[in-house]
Structure formats: structure tokens, C-alpha cells
Image: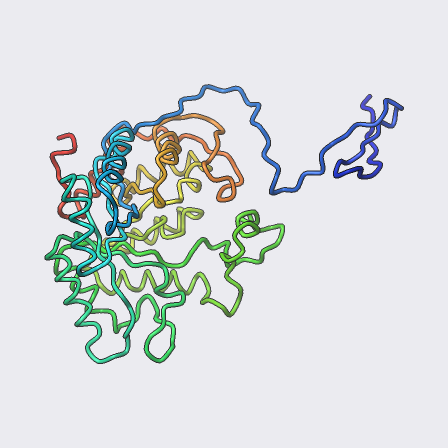
Length: 371
């Protein structure tokens, strides 16, 4: 028969626990959920990976091209070699002279290893001719070496026009920009909204409660931002309105928690692709369905990490390439759960790692990849 425990009080930050059978007091730390980090006692086969099976394109990188030293770039390339990262797409390419300088500093020093996406400044939306000027600037940037356009999450969230009104993601005044990207044959990688849980009440039922507790500025209170579904709907409207332009929805379009829905959107939107930046935690917690889904949509998914950290790539490789059970994600506050390996077939890995990027991102050196 089990001896019942009776909690008797708190002493110096420790909970005093007494055995009802008279065995004497026990001391248990008074631990908060933020501090609680249990050590895994599960003993199972482990296959940690530090290098991808195939060379890959990181389609979601961020580096400050201007001001970076030759030594810093060389160190980065050495780390990329260790990971088997053949090419990094720098989404923070900026525009104009800054784009040119960044390309010289990085791609000029290490040809083939870096490609840049340009960025658009949305100040002035509402002025006559803004769309045409933005399109002309994109054409100039492409002529200077940019191979894509990156749109940051401010569009649709808090970016304003000259009248102080929010600019919707599908605002028709921006149409010349998207059409120019299609005309140039370069993709648009766009981040719209944030995880849906950021809009949900910050209460015990929110599975990202810990992240929002530690990063309260990520909470999207009612009235401060448009609803999640509105922003995501605007993004999908944009894709449908410009079928001749390829769009890459960053972060699995924030639908990694509902892959069936994401699949339906992809079925309806042939010019839409998705990137994996910062969302492998969604795939690693549903290994059976995620594996089936990635096999079905293998032609529409691109490898990407976001916020460069060499060691964090290791979790991606382990999720995609192994069938390991119950291992840690690299940021506990993003995923308050464990990862499982998907064991993807080699033909699917090749497409996600590099073939899909070669298909839609011009200017990538094909000689860096098999076949």
C-alpha cells in the first residue's frame, strides 16, 4: 500500500512534504514552470546528426551584408561547410547601394555560396505612382544581382500608408510590385502574421503560454492587430490574384499545426510554396502525418532555418533524416514538447533540401549539387 504524502508548508523557498506514515519530512524545491526543465530518462536509440545527408539551400537566412568583415564571412562559410549547407539565401538583402555592397562583401568573396533577396520600403504607399516606383526599384535590384524579394511581417500587421491606415497584404496598390516579380521570374518570400496562439488568450490553455510569458511583446491583444485569420486570408488572396508570380509562404504559412488545411490551400494555389523556417517543431510532434504530408507535397516545400545558429540545424536534420523518438527541440519556449524523427525518403530529402529551390530561385549555382 502506498504511503500518502501530506504537504505541510513552505520553508525558505522549499515545499515541506511529510510522509503520513511518520517517515519524516521531505524537501521538494518550489519550482516555477519557467524553471522546470526535467531531464529525459527514456533510453532509446539515438542518432544525433550534425551534417545534412545532401547539400542544401537555406532559403531563410538573415545576415547583415553591409559592414560584415572578410573574416566573419569566412567563418560563416566554414560553418556552412560543416553543415553541408551549399547556399544561404540572405533575405535581409536590402535595396539599392546597400544591396550592392552586401553582395560584394559576401557573394563577391565566396562566389556561389550566397544569394540575396531584395527588400521593399513601404513608406509612401498611397502616393501617386508608388507601385510603379517600387516595381522599378525591384527591377534595378534584380539587375544588380537580387534573385528574389523578401516581405517582412509588418505588411498586414502594422505597416501604414500615407493616411495612417493599415496596408492589407492584398492591397491592390501593391500589385505592380508582385507583377514585376513575376515578370522578372523571381520568387517572393513573404512572412504574414505570426503563430495563431499569439492571438489566443494568454491563459493556462494556450500551448505557447511559456513563450508569451517570456516574450510578452508577442501577445496580439484584440484590437491592436487584425485577427490572425484575416491576415492569413489576405495572404492567400494575394497569391491567387497573381498566378504568374511564385510566392513562398514563410514558416509553413503558420499552418503547420493544421497540415490538412495547408494542403488544401496548396492544392488551390499552384504558385504557392512554403518554407520551413523556425517551424520544424510542428512537424516533429506529428511524425506519422507530417511524413505522409511531406511526401505528398514534396514539390512545394523548401528547407530554411531563420535566425542563423549552426547547432540549431542539427534538430532539422534529425527530424527529417532519422526515426528517433522523443528528443529535445532547440528552444524549449517555442515547443513545450519533444520531437520525433520522420525518416523521410532520400528523393523527398533531395527536393526539400535543394531541388525545389533550384526550380524557383534563379541564380543558384547548380554545380554545388548532385546531378
